[in-house]
Length: 483
Image 1: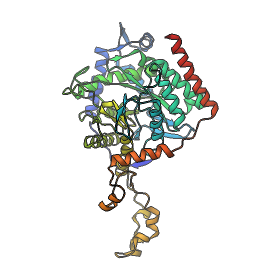
Image 2: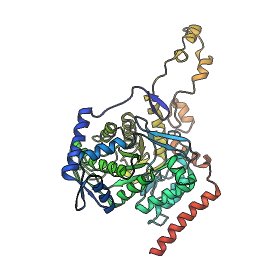
Image 3: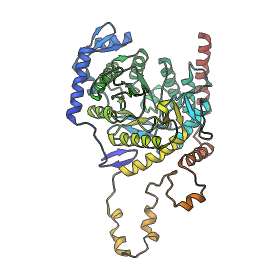
């Protein structure tokens, strides 16, 4: 029986590729690592790889097959994330699928005015509160890049806001290696110590790697740092088929997968058993019609996730986004399709719900709408309980064809279980008119305001809040000294 978000799914799976296709991509990956190699832009990483058996030629590392096989044998098949209070929140592995927001959009679509504007740190706070409140959202990200903070250390401010305004797990992004170190330091303060955070991690770093064949310095440093600490990491090289890799899906995926394998090898050489997740998106042709980095493309759907399934490793996926600039039919179908494919392929940690305009704009309304869509999809793909209680033969025998099922105790026991949604309107026309005749977009705006006005998050202790403020202040003072 397969578990996802606490709901069993016994049949609703979809495999984009079979074992033969996956094995062919794996074998091609091994050849790329041995014949082409990966650019490794960090001396310490090259030394570790060389000691582990790699051949180093300048900045390029060539990995033999045994290094990959050995690393795959020690990389954990699951990642467990906790909430801020130490309770299990996500078991990322197998076909368990969890969903959350995204990070660092340069613009926000104001849910009250419809204006596309620059976001502030208070928008980060509101995004976190909204994600904390929405039932189908399992983890939290910063959503937007605040324009009213020091841009050198904006991520430190984001992290302080996230830790203060959610108890759910957090996925953070930092533009430099120091930011990753600071984020972990802040988490350790909240957890009550280094060991406490390692034993029950409630946050993880999304590491952006330049491409499948180029491992940049900051990504490698983060990989080694998190592995040394035994903390989970999301190591994500991304290719653009036809730009930095073959335009064909198989060729793009094989070269991207080579970079993924390098990250797995490096993490396991640093510390066997260090948890690491692999990409669940890209690995397919870039949009050469527009040369815009789109978030929802047909050809790549499920392909990298299939490779994660091949290795039985946690997958960091992408879902609930749109390349539309407004909330329209395109937004609706792209959000729904991407959520559906992520859920049915079994990508484990799916981010970027609420992203619009190819990741340049964030929408609170779209996040709220996607929450309803995701609830519908989870209900539609859940296993069906067949038991004496659910078959209800005694009720059928008692009431027959003309009995009052509406007033029966059996109905009262079960009527709250089906999915209804907060925003989906199923009333007739007159009822809809009486309620204001609002579109889903308008209803979503109302729901966002209601949550922001009413939802309360359990606060951190004053001592911990002060400690986080001091870390951010220390970073700000350092930036001023270095200026």
